[in-house]
Image 1 (tube, rainbow, N blue to C red):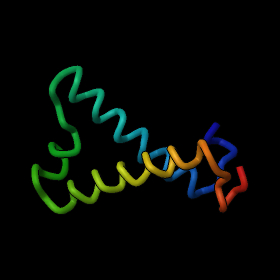
Image 2 (cartoon, one colour; image 1 turned 180 degrees about the vertical axis):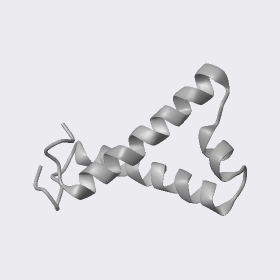
Image 3 (cartoon, rainbow, N blue to C red; image 1 turned 45 degrees about the vertical axis):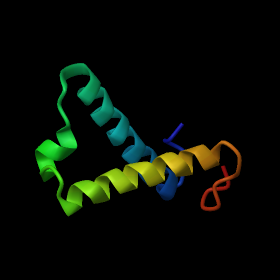
Length: 72
């Protein structure tokens, strides 16, 4: 699916996958990898969470409209 997507779609997909894996780790073994790597409550952590949220919104929108970058 992402192999033939444009660069923007690949980035959005990768960020969403990172967020999903982090939530899976939180649920499975109570490990928040983003906070472990970047520190709890730091600006960098907030930026990563913001990017994951924006990626989720972009993927949601992609169900209803065509990507303007790759027309998929």
